[in-house]
Picture 1 (cartoon, rainbow, N blue to C red):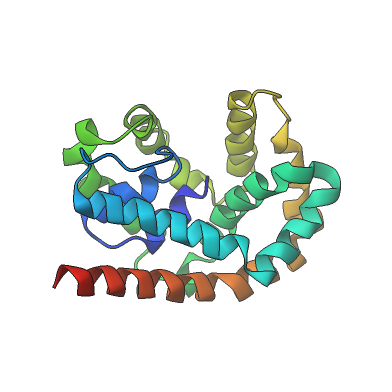
Picture 2 (picture 1 turned 30 degrees about the vertical axis):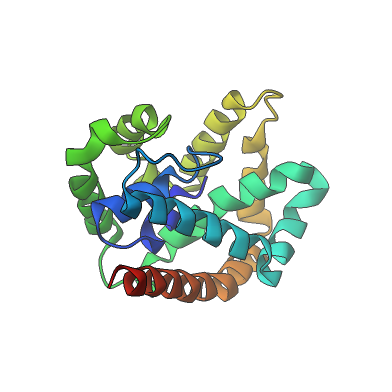
Length: 199
């Protein structure tokens, strides 16, 4: 669900961006129809998710949400991560957020018809609806969580969680800032290992 973060943690190639973004849309065994580089990107997405799930700062982040939202706190925290990344973008990149988003979509657009799974149908909405840029604002997160809730079978009204971005903002932001450099380092290590295997 944290599309911006996974794209940011991907390598610059179209295949890495596609694979890292597709991780939320491709489940189970990876098809041989996918290129090796896209499969590597999906595997990196999965490794990042596993790393995130075991990080103590993420556990503390989710504990703020659990009393109100139970097991949905994992989904909500993923979306909140994109908010804090978008808001704190200059701390993590010399490239502006707008320039990053434009570069990502320019890189992926020539491959739009090849995107795996449901991503092929979601991608145009993500691009044209400016989802990634909307995550900077609490209202954008509210809309993202509303749309997510509609796709879940129990329609859990996840958007009610956005009050935490005001009421618990200082703690959540601090937890994110303590976590995100670690996952950046982990993702870089993953990409370095993939590069060594190719050489």
